[in-house]
Image (cartoon, rainbow, N blue to C red; front, side, top):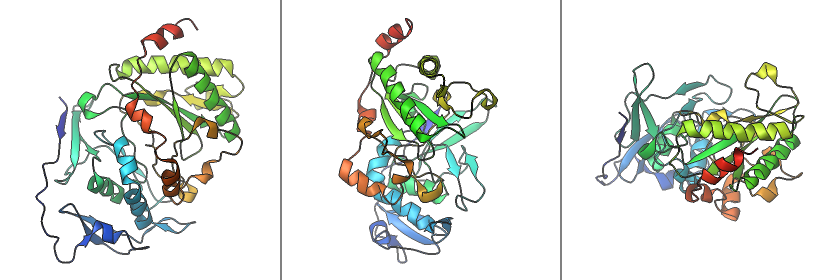
Length: 333
């Protein structure tokens, strides 16, 4: 049985000597070494702040922490109550990466979700429900935030599903944009609304919010049917072939398999472990045009975009679509 720990109410105390209030800490342009900050009465040690994470740009771990601090109010709703898969780069994007699902000794302030895996092992997943928890996982070297598609309250029932449009080595971003619009067209035919964002890497993600009454087992074949229809309508540009050897180098892979339980995609507004510190940017559909590039959305440009555009993905957390009619229509394709 899954177990969830929610953090108890904090016992607010005057900050200790040598500790820095988090707001004061992030007013600086740079920090070095290790520092301990106080957040709502709790202490968090942030380490190796001047370690360079993006060598070409010179961006440091502090720069990454400051970005997430700056956009915390925007990204936290997409992480709330969702177990995280930690993809850690403790030495920056050119260092060794490893995945971490299990936290053996989570700090007292951190909420978590526990479940027994297929091997009978108890796994403790971190949950970033607040600022201190977000900064904690980022301090571990987690550049990108990868939450589940479901919340702890109904962990087997996602409240959105998604398509990951991933170009093969010879495919262009123009093809990705074309297929994104083809997915939108398909969703329109089914009476569903999807919301696009850049992946922050090389492709586009399209999220479809739904009522959390369907299991992952319900969603995967449904998403597969949509992806397959898109690929069949656009055989030169798209494929759903699972094995890389079966795809053409000039095609866009319409990946529906990220909807399998336990998998994840980069959360909106997440920084990616890519050159320029690109970020996953929610888009308006009208922005998917010839001018759109991935490089225009980075750790440095995203805060200003949020200030100008607001949260373009907000409806993903509010809109709850039934799939009954769409499933019926899809059977006639």
